[in-house]
Structures are given as C-alpha cells and as structure tokens.
Length: 300
Ligand code: SF4
Image (cartoon, rainbow, N blue to C red; front, side, top):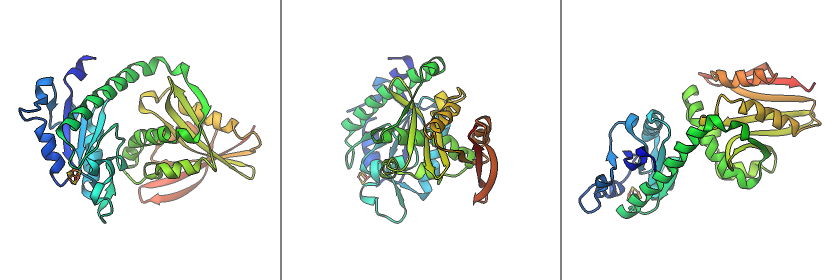
C-alpha cells in the first residue's frame, strides 16, 4: 500500500439525500467507528481529496456541483456512491427533477448498497475504494511507459460496460471543453451501447487487459462513418487516438470514402482527424456554443 492510501482524504457531498445516508456517513466519524483513527480525513477541499463520497440522487441543482467537485480533484481519484439513491436514484428515481444516480454525471468506482447505507458498509466501501485508488495510481505511473504494449482489437458486446465507463471518464474532459453535460456520449446508456453493437463495429485499445481507448465505425453504401474516438486521460498524447482511427478504417476494406465528425471548440478532436487525413466539408449547429464539424477523406 502506498503512502497516500494509508491516509485517504475524503470529500463528502449530499446531492439531494433525505439525510438518512448522511447521518450514517457522520456515524463513521463518531467514536464507535472512528475512521479517523485509521488515517481517514474528511476534507472540505476537493483539491486535497482522493475519494469523493456522494449521497443522494442527482437533480438539476446538484448536477453541476458534482461535476465541479470531481473536476477539481487531482488524479488519481475514486468516486463512491453511498446508498440506493446515489446508485440509481432510489425511491426518487421517477421524480420529475431527478436525473438518476451519480453515474449519470460522473464515473462511479464503488457502489455502497442500502437505504440507508449502514456505517459498516460505508467503511467497507471506502476500503474497496482504497484498492481502486492504488490500482489507478499504479496505472497512472505506468501509463507513459507501456503504450507500446497497446493491442488494437475488435470489441465484442461483452466489452460494452468497459467502453461505457471509458466514455464517461474521457467524456468529463469533453464536457469541460464544450461546457455541456448533455453530450450524446455522456447520455448513452448500457442498453443503447449494447444494441449499437448490432449495427456498428467497435475497435478497442487494450493495455494489460484494460480498455484504454475505443472507436466506433459503421458502413453505408460506399462510406464508412467513424465516430466516438475516446482515449483514457492517462494515455492521451500517445497517438492512440490516431491509431484507433487507422484500425477502424481497416475494418471497412470496401469503403471508398470515410466520414467523421467532431465539434468546435474541441481543437484536439479536429487536430486528430486532420492528422489522419480528414478535411472539413460541412458544419451543423448543436447549441449556440457548439458546432458539429463533419470531415471526410477518400480512400487512397
Ligand atoms: S438511500 Fe435511503 S436513506 Fe439514503 S438518501 Fe436515499 S432514501 Fe435517504
């Protein structure tokens, strides 16, 4: 166990809980459980935190706060959803103002069940989170050294949860660039992604059995449509995105033309496709601040 996971700093946020789970979180700090004796520190500053503990379901007001706290936390970081509401929306799921569990906004690493979640379960969830934190720390340190071991393989339907998790993790950077939480990749559900495998081909980039990048492709007539290039933030700037585009193009040997799209102001997406030989031919407004840019290239 490395030094920082011996004394994890936790930030707790109540997204819209009934207060039941929050009381149980506080119980973890009382003399019976006293997690501080194990080195756990409850901090109010996201910039000092390793673990983000969220209680309650997500509503329109808490959505931006959750993303704001998450984005301020340094890497590596772990998210723990405490209680049924944080996991899925719970009894508030069908309410007009609830958008779901915490994973409807940010990627969640550990789910603690219960209504309310018991203090023992919360402590257990934090212990699990420490394991995840350690693994992320190892991955982060190894990332610059092992990109030459990347395998590019055709993804199967069973890879959908891994790809969805990657989309949500990498999508946080995109949401920041576009200043928009409603990007299609962030809204996609597991069912939608699994069903998409019936129409499209996915290529995954894998290191040590972990999916660290993916891209989607679909052919119609003579054109192959390339979309959804995502690379885990630890592995960006290593030409993995470019290689994913090359690999998906190889999956459509009969295509005479390739079409891809990204958006302004995502300069990196435009650069990636430009380096892969694509040039802009059409734009389409998505919101007043975002313009979808369509690019194409002919097969040489
Ligand atoms: S899971 Fe139960 S106790 Fe916890 S916030 Fe939801 S309703 Fe309240």
